[in-house]
Amino acid sequence: MKFLSSKKTLLLGVVLLPVFLLLVLAGTKLLSSSPEYTDSAVELTNNVQNITIKAGLGYSPNRISAKASLPTQLKVDTSNTYDCTAFINIPKLGIKEYLPPTGSTYFNIPPQAAGEEIEGYCGGDTYKFIIRFS
Ligand SMILES: [Cu+2]
Image 1 (tube, rainbow, N blue to C red):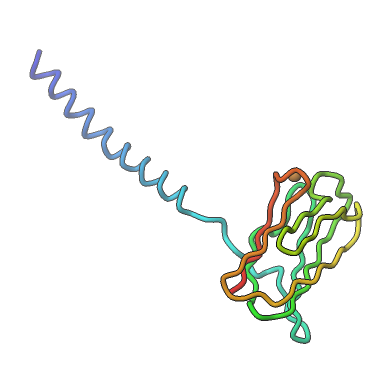
Image 2: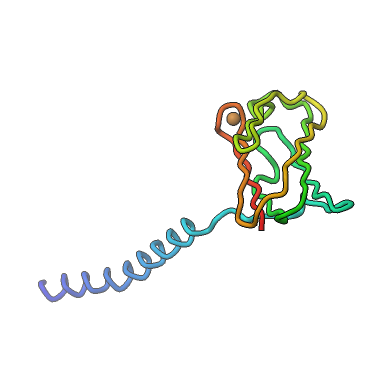
């Protein structure tokens, strides 16, 4: 009886330990994986960097990688946007304003040093975007 129960315990350990380790590993990976930064919304025209994001139930893209040391224009597009993203707050640029429900709004961003990040928030601080310069 005692032998059987210790064998059972061993079996349980053999089965559960890898499962446990796998879960820990998956959890660690999930925590360490940061959202992907994209430059798909960045376009260089006549040495001006144009960034276009869409506002409406979040900002898209919301992780943007841009080039440092370039004059930059941020274009925020709305299209029937009536949620909190229609209010935009970019503390570093001193911007706090309402966007039209539909349209394009342009903001000038002076050249940024490598490593700088500019964050923008919606009216309720629930949605956020980050432009990372490098
Ligand atoms: Cu919000």
